[in-house]
Image 1 (cartoon, helix red, strand yellow):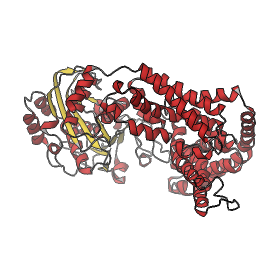
Image 2 (cartoon, one colour):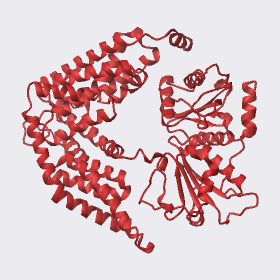
Image 3 (cartoon, rainbow, N blue to C red):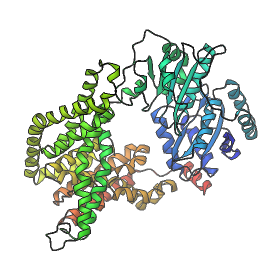
Image 4 (cartoon, rainbow, N blue to C red):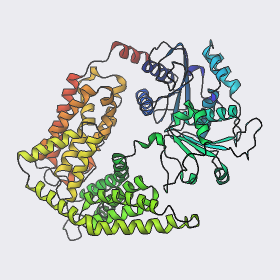
Length: 635
């Protein structure tokens, strides 16, 4: 596929009027929407801003490439705009951007269009092409310039210096990767190759893009390379670089300072890289790798078991409250099967999966088995969710220690580490520590929590519900939300379902309240915003609080306090009404598990939703004339 298959006259805005980064994004999104490229303009714009939040797409040299890969894109396309005066786009080199290419890639898009986008990134590294584009007078001229430089892609191997040889002792290798794998990945690769050519240094660059790994480095090339540059903001394979001079930096550094990186790759005095048994992040992202990241890795992998198990249990109750029990009068064989799959299988795996993936986040693949075994021992030993958390971090750091302990072994025995030594020593050490040291006090703490929660009544339990419910709406999926949910989940193992009930009802309120506010205050929402009404209802009923995030991000001062008020109210009322839902997830699908109080749960939910919807509707400002006229034009 050629670039001009994606870049059309209808997606080109020759002279942008915007003077700010936000304005440029708005103009280009409008251009793509008017060209029929997008099926959801607002969702695409939010995806563009989410990508900018990770790191600026102003790559320097006057070029910005905002991009997003999302279901909001109906068909792949490239939008183009230029500003002779330049716009402050927070570019990597601090200079104004004058050329803007907005990439719209559909989720799951074909490899052919990704190849075209990769070629575009390379073309824009050419100074002459940039000058031609900046001074182009018409859309036809822009397309002609791109067409002239859009050569058929050839298989790339080692880029040689003018008089160099692939067997030179100063061979440099590189790996580039960015979060979306569209623009920065290939621009960093081209920057490194162009600079290496100027310096007379042979180089080969492996790109980890949306379409997978291209130009993969071979074992032989790695063996004889003088140095290896890893310019990446995502996980890449680095075990293969053990014992080599490796420079790990963010992908932006590959674009900004290629000469410095190549010089570092040729510096033989640098300490050699020690592999950690799996994929590791570049140093550019390393500071983000901490307790919260490891915890969220476990929680995100556990959630599918929670959701599926909770809903299957709720479906079993549709046949009768005790229909899964063969001894009950309302016994149903299919209900028993649903219960076995949901409760005895999916729910039984939750804590081991949590612990296993926490450990894997810390120690990579060798941490998985010790973590899962530690999680199983937490369940069987009575320490439950709390013990599972401890097991995950314990296993991860134990395996890290084991790796360092065995790092001095002869290289000929390296094959024994992942298949025998890491799993044996990791499982044994984690298991024995859990059995003898962790489980006794953790199970005692679980019992103490159960006794404390069970003794709470009246005002105390209502206050607990108010706090847990309100926390769910503070950051809607962030640390406060997760802390509230984690507390509720832990209480399930302690035999008390009040906290998880308050957390669940508090998390259901925001999306539902926003949907109701759209109905009650129609004139305060744009047509695009109202288009998300149904999705917010579905997400709210399903206990997916994140559905309210786009509104909170756009207007946090009004949305967040409004949502906290309703979520806290719902949590407090649920506790006052005696609601207890014995499931950690599922929303409306598991309310029936609260045998005697589910109508009161729905009442508390309804009141909380109304509170948030009314407050938000009263606080929210009406759309501006510009927003309304823009929608009228689109209509």
